[in-house]
Length: 317
Length: 270
Image 1 (cartoon, one colour):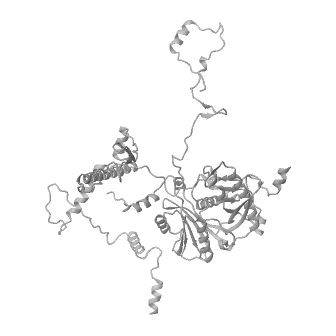
Image 2 (tube, one colour):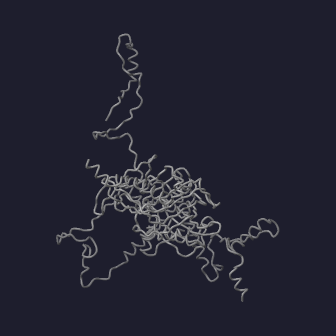
Image 3 (cartoon, rainbow over the protein chains, first blue to last red):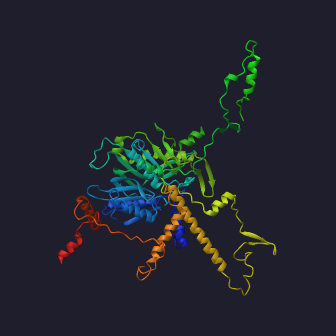
């Protein structure tokens, strides 16, 4: 009746425990897959993007018959098997040459994916400069108002941030800021696209290494050196999550939410001040100036006396 | 005066932008929404993007260096603010574990878990020794040259009892989860009854004659097998087509070709 897969030894038990859902999640790992047909450009792009994501990345060097927009079963399988939730699938066909698909999963199912064509590529090895160390957290810079205004670009930005942000940390070592991923989007009117399948506009993906120079001030002067890889992307197909699933995926755990403290604050002197609600003041019973003419008759008083309730005053604690 | 000459030796760290950048410093990100120079981007892409990114990077670095800073053994650390960007999770939030019988009881009674320290004071020697294990307080006689084989019967009983309790807890948790899902009819009793019924049926067929000549008990329910159903020979064409297509799909597959071209060519070449 209650058959559940039980780990047979302590090691596999530990391994399964690591994969269980947690409040503070593991780093999202990524798999870079080659589809049934690829080109040199796509292969290099996959391995370079993988190098940027290392150590939380797996590069599949064999071909797999995967077409994420048609069939997602094998991706679901890879997701479960390797405990990864990010994928990049590279393919090269006549219809869509030099194609990369960025895929993000939630709960073993595809959340959203976006397909880009590589227009112009320069690999990591084409730049004869020093590279950043493995596992360094990159800086991100997104240029262009498209990343704010276009829904597709916004999601692409979100996916890229999700891909390369790494472990979430509370502190960062200032000497560990080694490289920046700069993504620039432009909805160009000057250039003509020869790719009818693509959205108008280009996206420049560039990675620079950062050199911090003395400036005579607290903050250093920044100099950049292109480290590679460098791509010009053109967005093709995309498929985004529906609102319900996305809402479920972005649910914030209760523990992480700070409790809202109402009506208590601290003033400049460091005194704690609280506000209390005292109910509505009855203005009918307000004491105004006493005059002989306004004095009530004795009978009136007696009636009042029975009903009288002690009135409250507004006060500060 | 001296200060200004000192500064002019270095390049400036200030960058002017018409629209100030937005930052999400928890992931070290900056978002620049200023208009780009299209013609320069087209004709002088690399240089323009490098200059533009340098300015942006300078702004992000300025922000990071202005965060509260703490120096530690690892180096100078900047304290990062909370995440602003909404990024989806990898897996759904963990569900709380259903409480076991003991946990329910402890909550009602207010029993609290108190942690026992690992070391215990040994009055005899006046020393702190481990509560259990090697050189522990409870290994009296373990160092003797001859010890009796321990009687494990009591321990085994304890283990089986605990296992039964564990099973019961799992069952109850399952029922609780069923109820929370809205499957109300399933209570503990009926669940166990159904399970028992199933086991009886299995054991009945465990004879050479598949239980055909077994003695029936009084009031024993008759076993119901699977009744075969046949579709009418003439009738629904649409259904028939659908079912045959289903079979074809299952055999040939969705994507696969009906003919294995590679094999067919090889056969023909022979």
